[in-house]
Amino acid sequence: MQDQEFWHNKWAENKIGFHLVDVNPLLPQFWPQVQPTQAQSVLVPLCGKSEDLTWLATQHKSVTGVELSNIAVRSFFAEHLYTPMVTSLSSQHELYQFDELSIYTGDFFTAPLESYDLIYDRAAMIALSPALRVQYVERLKSLIKPKGKILLIALDYDQSEMQGPPFNVSESEICQLYSDMKVTRLHRDEADDKHPKIQNGLSRFAEEVWLIEK
Image (cartoon, rainbow, N blue to C red):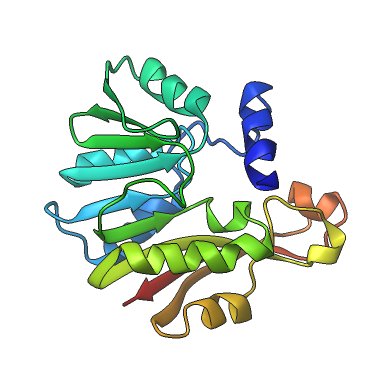
């Protein structure tokens, strides 16, 4: 799959400008909107080595990430000085576990996942090409429990002005893909003239936070 090779190369070459060194400020700001309880399980698809995992682990007893790149997962545990238990599940997947955190390495679409109360999508949907987004959302729907909720952080810009990833994911596409669920936009942060994306030629650039409820 072309997308997989692309991301493997990014991690191998350490070209990870998409990685935030701190917790995404939108997570603690808007996570309360999903009305989380500590007992609820959380899934973080395409998690990289995100600091959001550690923040979520302070809020929940079970946080599960899925990441294609072994480099990213090993870096995550090494940087936090955690020594995970590693279980080989198949030729395609390994499971890294430490306290509240579990991270599967390998293809998200075939990882042996269970079902989850809450899903946090910060950089998964916007990392996937349009063809894969349909398949991705179907997979998410199959993994979320009844009355489950998704917090989605997406980007809105004119796709013709910049090559993804990260890709533009419009309001109409989100509503269409999640047409059988309740979709609410919680926040839109419109970039001003000083934003690097605008200075680099984009006519508009906004970060949006969506609450999606089953």
